[in-house]
Length: 268
Image (cartoon, rainbow, N blue to C red; front, top):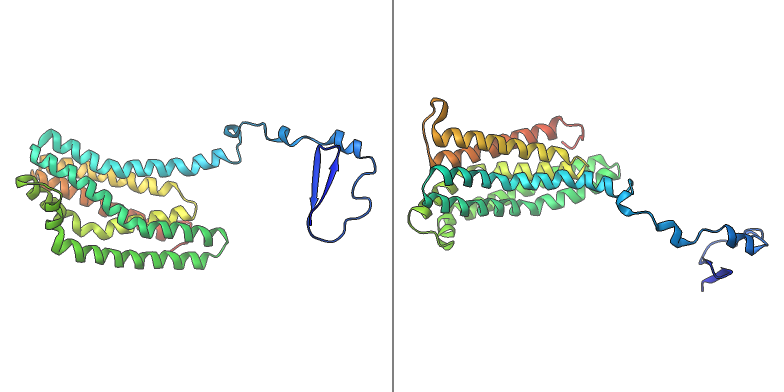
């Protein structure tokens, strides 16, 4: 049973287990101990916002991830702006729907990404780098299985899925065309998700932001050029927007794999 020690009711020390304490552990004059003791309430008066050991590192970790998620959302947003300015309202309805579909695809691979981040962080932080590499390889394997399952469902049932979302006429046809152009880069989306999640688990929060920034730059440039036929290229209209988005994800996957293979984390 715990034995409390009370020095003028301002300090309490509880001895639970362990070897007996030496006889001179407590001062003979308890009043001197209580006078020099600092009340607990005085030790926690600092504003936690100003604590450099907690909040600032937390913000440094969270801010790049927040910006990365914003850039992931911006892919569909830039396509929507381009469609709304230069194409018909039927295509605008289709791109609005397909932006949600892209979000759903990212959500599909978040199943793998979340597990990869947690396990890589555990082993990397413990210095077990070989196990961290095994986790990355297994994450790619699971991601490949999820990708194959996605193909198995999307190829035969993709048109029916879009029909369930209540698009009609030209809007539905445009959504189907966009979907079929984006579908082949599904592995690229998986690669981006797994690599960014693995690097994040190793403490590298910035490279995911860089990858999504490149995805957006390529998407915006390629979509506008191919949609409007700039620089002597053919004017592809709606197909150009879908191809530009596919190019963005493809280039992003190459960049992310380069970061994983040639980066300093040693996760490959």
